[in-house]
Image 1 (cartoon, rainbow, N blue to C red):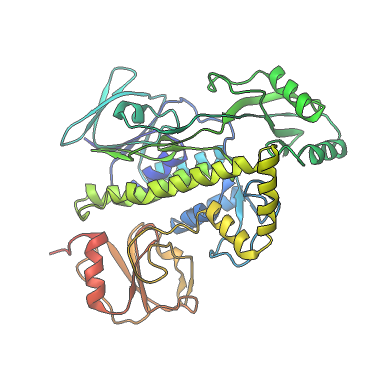
Image 2 (image 1 turned 135 degrees about the vertical axis):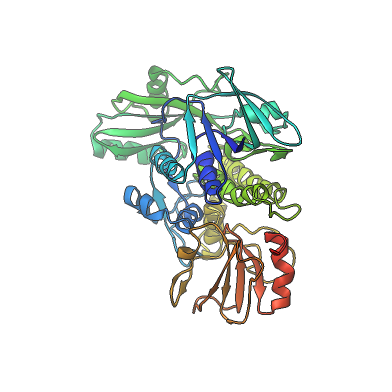
Length: 475
């Protein structure tokens, strides 16, 4: 029997597979598409996802293929500078097209021993007390202890589970594609600057070799958004919105997206769970979608592995929904707000001007960008120190960096006192005695996802907290 079947081989599913393999969990990824897609749905990683890659020793691979940016405009395309003094050691956005992210994560999962089956579609599932039976399109069946649906906004797993997906349908639609542009650069720049004064959902981004990523508002909402727009439809909308089609030709791919916002009512049904777009869909404003899914996987992986490996405390797996559902809801809210602020109607434009004034205050600008980049996330661990529930930024220690110590996906006690012990949990928690000038607390206990589970200096207090996240002490 397989330990975990992951339905969907996008960034969420591949990140989850890697996290599970760190703990020796047998995992099989089922991907419906026979070949990796070349469609560039997402353009990069935000600060928290960059931290995630650093925590697992993957960042150098991504930096090799990406480009670092410190540009503003991520919240509703309101042009404000990148905030100073953000609470992260990676205060930038990493531009990297999604096909590259997919490839790097697939390589990582394969290196760790995950099985990836392409051209393999899940069409049915059933579960009992002992596991899940997955039915594939070719008539074969697979048996696993758990199954996680990472299969996108039209998730087959979510539908088979009967999980409600409430929210709002699309009211506006946007066309997107990659194509060649023949208009001279100075003329293109002038036209784009003029149009973007009012149309924030319009833009042309150079990709090199005369190719551009082109985004333009659609005329209406298509009945079936899985059907791509025609190239003539694309050219017509460019002429309507910008007064020119920019001499576009030779499209590589064309697609459309709406502004629907929906969220799964439950992220877990027995031995089946949902993550990524299968659990939530929202407009791409702020570039949060891929990042939100990767962070879902980062939260879920170690908890699911703990359950399979037999040491998970009661309620640990259910804490996945308890922690990530509110984060997803917050992203839905901020994307709804951003779409309103990008409307050409007088009311939303007035609110946009007011918010633009407020974002001149550094605190407001930083708050909104920390929301977009997810470094402002705090899970509810109850009352306590201000760090409790937050992920801890990378800090410099006398013997190296904090994130360098987290590559194995284990818990970590960073002990600046040298008096504490994790005896009984050493198979799950690393004890690091070191000091940092950047950390003004005696000791912190970090979960495998880097969130602070305890702050203090008393051994008895630590012993009271360890079982909550890491189960009973070994005999």
